Image (cartoon, rainbow, N blue to C red):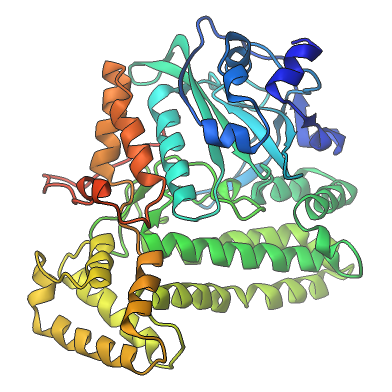
Length: 490
C-alpha cells in the first residue's frame, strides 16, 4: 500500500510491542485468502480510531482487513503467551491471529488492531489458523453488545468472508474478524515470561505494561506491586459488571484475562435468562468450572496466577515476595463484593448504604432462583413497577420482600422518581438473548441475510434507552427440551 493510500485511510500505526524481547512474538508474512468479501463493518468505531470508513471499505481497505495486504509501517506479528486452560498449564500463543499494529487514535490513545482467523502462525499447534464465519459474527455481536452495556471490552471493527471453507466437523465458510483492543497483553503473557523467559524478560514486559496501561504508577518505588494492585482493581470491577448483567464468559482461562481490564475472547459466551448461579452454556465445560456463580472465584484464581508470575519483581527474597502477593490478593474479594453490591443498589434504586442491603439483594436473588424468574426482566419489571406475567410476583415471599424494599427506599433522601431513573440507567431493557442471537447468526450464515443481525445490533446499541422498538427483543425463549449450549467455534 502506497503512502497516498495510507494517508487516505488514516493509518497512524506504531509497533511498540515489537520492541520487547523477541521471545514475546514471532514475525511472519500474511496468509492471503482467495476472495475477501466485507460482510459487516463498524463505521462508528472506524471513525473513532481515526480511520476513514469509505476508504477502509474500498477494495484496498478490505484487502487489509482480510490479511491480503498490510498497511505501510505495519510489522505483522503473532504474540506468544501461555496459560491455564481449565486449570491445566500449557504453552499457547496467537495460533490464528495477526497483530498488524497499534493505531494512534485522534484522542491520542493507542489500540491494537488484530486480525482473528488470519491463518497459521508458529503457535498454531497443528491447527489451520482460520476461523469460521459464525463464531466471528458472534464475537462481533456480543462484544458490541457489551460495549453498549458499558462493560470494558475489546471491540469489533469488521468481519470479512474469505471465500474459502474451513474444515471442522463439517466444512464451514471462513471469515476473519478485525479486533480492536487496548492491548492483547494477558495474564498468560506474564505466565509465559515467568516460565520460559529470564527475569529481565519479565521485567521488560512489566515495564512495557505499566507504560502502556498504567503510566501514573511509573514514578516512585514498588511499581510492580502497584501493577498488581491496579490489575486486581480492574478485574474486580469487570467481573462485578459481568455478574450484574448476567453475562457468562464461558472460558475464563488465564490466557483469556486481559491485563487492561477488558473482556476478551468471546467463545462460548452467552447471557443468562432465568437466574441460576449454576448456569453453564459451554459444551466443553462439563464440570461447570466457569459457571456464572463461579466467575468471581475463578477471576481470583487467575489473579493468583498473575501474582505468582510477578513474584521475582516483588521482592528479592521469595518468601517475602509471596507474602506481599498474598496480602494484595486477599483484598480482591472485598473489592469485587463492593463493586457488585454498589451495582445491585443502583439496580434497585438505592442511593445510600445500609448494613442490611446485602441481605435484601440476596433474598431477591434466592426468590428469583426458586421461581425460575428471568434475571433481566425481573429487574426491568421492578424498574417500571409492572409486576405481572411472572409467578414470582404472586408469591407471598415476594410480596413481603417487595414491602421491605419499598420501606428501604423510603429511608433515603431521594424520591421515587430519582430511584426509578437510577434503575432505568442500570437495568437494561435488552440483552443479547440467546435465541435472538442464534436466529440472526443462522440468517447470516445460511441465507446470507444480514438484516436480522443489523437490527439486533441497532437494538443493543443503547440498552438503557428503554425504547418501544426494543420491546420485541425482551421476550425470553420458549421452553425447549434441553439446555442451551454454546461452542468455542475454533
